[in-house]
Image (cartoon, rainbow, N blue to C red; front, side, top):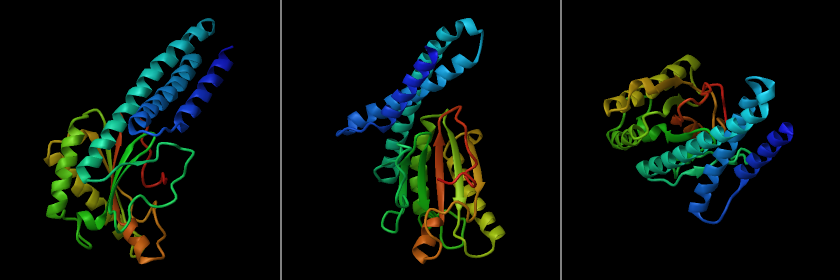
Length: 248
């Protein structure tokens, strides 16, 4: 019986995760529902795996209920955070919350050098390096500071979220130099967010150099897109993969 319940919850999860509707409000409801269903499956599985076997059924139901509440809350928080960050940088968030649909192009381009991407477990704010820095520099441009100041205010509104800042380069030049430059650029963003009130204990910094390209490195246009900084926002308690090796 309980195996059937877990299977049913899994089906619900897949259905909710893939659901789409015509209006923005309905889409927001569906994303929260998807998060709730995912939380239900996780909570139910944990309930089944712990405690005495004769109480397993009750634990599955209790775990599923708690997981659904937590998952729905996380989905809502990330949805709200993405909308606010999109307003900060002046773009409409890209919806990549359906894991079954693989993106067919980079989230940024020459015409759109900044993007906010909603994913199932996080929100990504992606900047081409030319938006934030001059060539071969890790000093923030004055106009970049104004945008990052807005982002800092938004991040402070959700103080439990964890922030990961990762710098990336293209594949040309010395590998170690690229890693160092990407680290310094990510660190420059971190320092500015802290200067504007974001708690430093919430922020992790990585310099990834040429790892995890989002475009081919065999063209000038592709290399320009790979030179970027990403600010990733995770909910409290999330498992955070190391961004230099976990390539989307």
